[in-house]
Amino acid sequence: MANQQRLRRIADQIQRELSDCCAPSSKTARRDDHAHRVEVSPDLAYAKVFFHDLGRCGSLTRIEMGLERAAGFLRAQLGNV
Image (cartoon, rainbow, N blue to C red; front, side, top):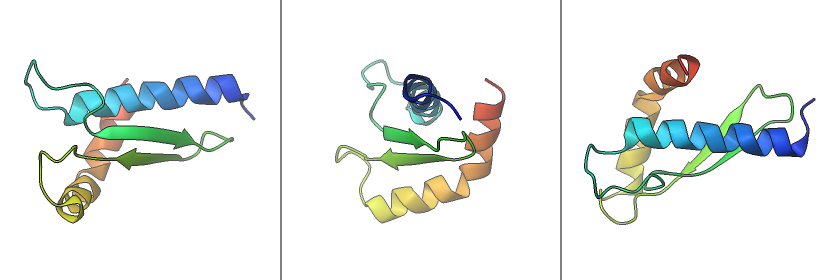
């Protein structure tokens, strides 16, 4: 079981990597535009990602469906880090 500080560092790293994968290639885009918060389970088996769009992309339902379709790709990208 990991300690709380390690869990927080891992969650922060996952958030950064997901934000880099999802961010548009605009220099004005902020890093935290999509992945708002990440929670990692104590055994590091699961990560729960909370997201938002800051009113730029439209419906949250549409964004959620897109992220669900891209879940395999995003997992693979995190696995390559």
